[in-house]
Length: 271
Image 1 (spheres, rainbow, N blue to C red):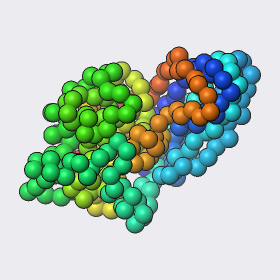
Image 2 (cartoon, rainbow, N blue to C red; image 1 turned 120 degrees about the horizontal axis):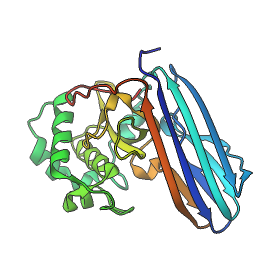
Image 3 (cartoon, helix red, strand yellow; image 1 turned 60 degrees about the horizontal axis):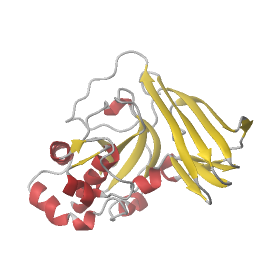
């Protein structure tokens, strides 16, 4: 087991379901071979327990599917992670999938921009640092500035967004440069204000490396929740067949001891 401070993470969601519906949650930490995880998930509707069967997702993700009646739904999840996860295997399917344009990372529309800005930058760590710095200096982090349908192109035009928007633009630029890139939803100790966080990952040297142009939390402390092409695959909550209103959300993510120092030039993987 790799040496890493113990990390404690969790989420509490409160929703008002207006009709019978199905909810898909992605709040549990991903499968973490090599680490030990203690966790608890409790879901209630008007105080009565709700079953939450687990469904395996891409990249080791774990979704939970709920069938709920109208009422007040409370989701409470807590996990303690001991040690670090092993690096996941990288397949050819990963490489091909994460080179393609996707719903929120329209890399085919940013090819000219990517080559104009980054041609001549060496592959590997230099390119990741250059893209991260470019996105970080051109966008302003403004909560509430983007909508649920905004992708990388809209983010670049507006020059502002939140963590998922930063990640989408990084992903789109890297794919436009033929670097496989994907999005990870994570718990992020040190993040302020605390919330679910989104980062990009790039396939460099046979391993997935984190790129977080927001610089809001040290990458080496992140805990993976979900992995996918973009936010369409990594949303913490999706509802089907009825309407529900999210009325409360609390996210926690802390480590034992001080947070690790961040070196923006280092290659870091989520563990």
